[in-house]
Amino acid sequence: MMKKTILYLLAVLTLASVPVTNLFARASHGDWYFREEVGGTHYSAYAAGNGKVHYKILVFACGTSRNFWAYADESNVTQGSRCWTHLEGAADTDYPNFMIYEADNAGHNRPAADDCESCQNPNDRGWVRLKLLSGAIIVTNTYDGEPVHVSADGQWHEFWLKRQGTADWLTYLEFDWIEPAEFANKKYWVGNSVCYRREGGSPSDQARGEQTRTLAKLTGGDPDQAPQLYNPFLYILNENGTTGFGKIAVPYVTVQKPYRYWINGTGDAIPCDKSGDMFYVNSDDVVKSFFVTMEVQRSMDSLQTQILNSNTINVPAYHKLHDLAINGLKRKDEASGKWFIDYRKKQLTWKIYHPAEEDIMANDMFEIQRAYKADFSDALSLDIVPMRYDSLKTDTLDQQTYTYLDTVEAAWWNPVEKSSKIYYRVRRVSATQWGWTGHDYADSSSFKSPQSYSPQPFSNTLTYRLA
Image (cartoon, one colour):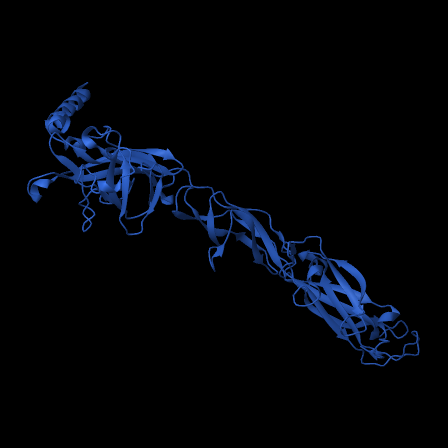
């Protein structure tokens, strides 16, 4: 009970200390409007949704005999009329101003009334000019009713505003302030400090006073939805035909209007639309935690932008074909028990690196072709070999060797060149659209036996090279 009594007495003493003119002097002092306490009708701010805070502030009023108007001090923005914010937890002195503004005394705040010949009632408008120091706003009560976006460009912007009646010639500035991205889910205050002048008298008498008020304590909206990346795929064909070699397409969607993105937050900026595919040329390794950093529009009616990171995905490898080699087949002579190289029969080997890494084409195959001409114009497809990605059955954990044996009589002799030189090439089937040359998913080679063979069928009288 004692605690409640003390609080009551403190409240009474506080009210008693407030000057009576601040509360009841409207009849004789026009500056009553500018001195209005928080909770009145002339200054307000509230969360308007979609990352915006709506402000209403008085910039001009006429008292019983004199005009009063807000003025700015461009040389010292901490002294003139201004709007500010304060994040919870920030330093007590950290009240950054985001806008300065002022009205005018001439013609009841109509300093250029003669330029409104088209106005049905020239008295229903007032004038203001403002400068954004940071961020962006949208002026919502322009005279013609069209909202106007203003950004922090270092320039003064002038507006005719629609008055709400002509009683006391009141002019209000109403605008939506675009909440910065860093305010998301944080508590903060918005406020206004108005410095105002009174018509007549000396300059010192005109500088009538200053009133600072906290208009609202708000909580920043939820962070904007991040750009979304989806399952990648091998980008082989588009509406223009064959695409570049080895491109992996990553589909994406963003809610906001985007401007550009950076892959993994680095490199050159790439322009983009709200949805589509972004392209990445991958090799033998999975890219883990792949993401993009995207610059997007802060809100639909704002030119202010923000930077958002997408979700992360893994981009599979697209294994290249390495180390194609051709040699004769090593065999064991049944009679002597010795090993020898049978150069008539060909053994092809090639490798992929990092076979344990997931591949973008998990069920791909290799195609093998043989030719007698160096340009492969007479190439014949021999077989297809399934790709495997089993690191437990590899030469090492870093590579896997594939083997193909071409032992038929057609591989013994080249009837076109009349020699033992035979041409081979191997390609990933998924790379068919790109042809056989110019990329790392196909390779070719040839092999010529160090021994001379005739085109006759194999016989035991032929000489072999002992291993």
